[in-house]
Image (cartoon, rainbow, N blue to C red; front, side, top):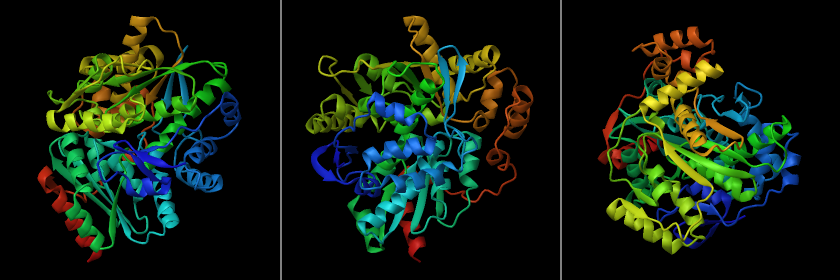
Length: 494
């Protein structure tokens, strides 16, 4: 399996090269040269396997330079850190509706699925390529990726991880998870601005020749832990296929039946992983793309217009407070039949004008529907599911649940639907508690009250934050990201 680029289809590299490099020199994203085919018989053969085995099977279809045994070893070590043997348990909420809980990893967010295995993939890829230089994993986060990357790469040999987060754009628990992170190779900085500002600044550094040359002179190369990196995205494909296997195994559906997935999204990586599973052959009827008030993606799927010239909202689902959805580029590349010239045209327009438009007569987006939920909708979803189904969810999952409810009512679609549950409710205790009727301004008091109301156990990694020392306190301007990266490089090589 080779990999090409969304902005230059002439590029042809290996999976290892795509993982190590992270992003193309032209700013494009690496994609597989073709989609491996997953037949119904293949899916049936996955059903008896445990999650690490399923994940290794799927990854081996995309990364044939790795043996299945290698990938299985990485998956077992990564997912041994999860608090549920199923890794991604599928919970039936009511007839035809299921929650895929992706938050049982070490940082209580779905990013753990990929970021616990990425360090193994990156380290092995460097060895396969004979690369001895140090790797600087440069990451922008809207809340969850940062902590998952820090925890995943903590004390990994010859690797340093640098995280930039919007200083006023994450929940208190998300902030504390990052600023209290221990490890000799981790570096965390707040940034003045929002996630889009952080992401744009990081992308500029990736494509800045002066920075690349300065790091190379010190024996350092950059890579990414964001979902722009193929090694971050690929492991996410597996949980869509695994969820389908679990539905068949439990008798909820028959092999071959189509299902829906409702996905809360900001940077579009999570939905895109599902789309890749669909392109492989997974029977999917609809992807229900759910946004919060930052609903640029909703307009894109409904009207064909992607326009980021709009008000940016800070919401109770901060990991979705994103207007520039990087992984949308990979979808655009596919729906235009891998026309790299068209992608360059559209993204040049986005860079110059902040918008582009597609013609629905030219592309097929029939598998996608989209909607958005405001703050009141999000609260109502949390409250309703808790009252009627005794199921408590975080604010991001609630956005997807709300949009799903609207879609279901408008269409009478009775297709079995899996909602991706992306974070543990205790990462957002104040807002979750408020949604079920109790106010509290202090995060730790909110944890106690939430437990008393729901009896849901709070993970140790959240409880341990109370009183933990804040190690990483520096805040920088978005114009200082390049300077900060070079300063970290100086520290590494001092």
